[in-house]
Image (cartoon, one colour):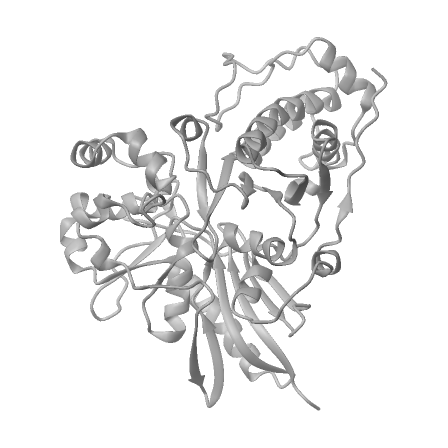
Length: 461
């Protein structure tokens, strides 16, 4: 019996850790999910347990290697960004993997801008709206001034995808998609690290930059395996679209964050863009992708839990709610703001408390919540489109199952071709494709993503 040739992809999200096997045509052969318990850093802040993660990766890798059905040809890694692993000269890990939601000390931020200049200017040049630890370059600055003894021991700081690759190769590198994701490190106009990185001598801790498509050939237990250098998950999720679609598009990636990604807008960001939480991601070739994001899924979860409490519904009830046109039109007649959002910083009218007394049913309040979230979604998509000539919008991620959201999208963007793409493969597929040199064509997304064109609503106004 001949063995099936496969590529392994480890796709590491903040919550779900996923493990995929793809065949040579990118068909999924195996998929496993797990959630790993968190640990805490020295301040008691919850964070990824690197040891548990390494063990899980090692166990899965060894199991596939020993499985008679498969021949492993390649491995790659896609992970969340804004996370560094700091290694000493012997390759030992020096610190916890600090969580990007951990609050940044104000005095460190003050010191940074005192030394390196205007906050808005640096945010614009690095295409990284100021977000504390989520700007992972600032983690290095924070370590240098908050934990100088530890900082002095660092030989390499590796972004998480490159650290996972290093576990298999022992080689320290950097690549564009990780450097370019809201890290505060990269000056997009200069196409080099920002001046502050050189002034603080942080560049000496970052591995040499290699293409995202680079791979390292190794021999493992007498088997030749190609090891990828890893990729940032948002850039990876975009890759199948870029490789298979020739005409300009916007990808709306939904989940904890709702991120509008426009690979066809390479204008430099303006101050106004930064204030609207626009940023850049990087394509695998170093070109910029204009993006705007807001914490939609996070806010949605907070508010839905409150609605379930208030109306005495089991959590999960909201998943069955279908779009109700009459309800929608009634709410739009006297449009107002009823929800006080907790985790969203985009400008909107602030109210002191959420008012649910105005709604008699869960469904009515839920439609109102979706209308208010959609207002922000329209704003962020419009920002990402900018002045580029786009006709197609692809939506992927968790909200493609949300009937109210999808109907509102088709309504508000009826002058575009709006398509829902359903792929549980997300960023894993991009990670598999980037280290392969197989050409793909226009039919690729149709085969892998169950694409559906959304029909615009015909509302009886």
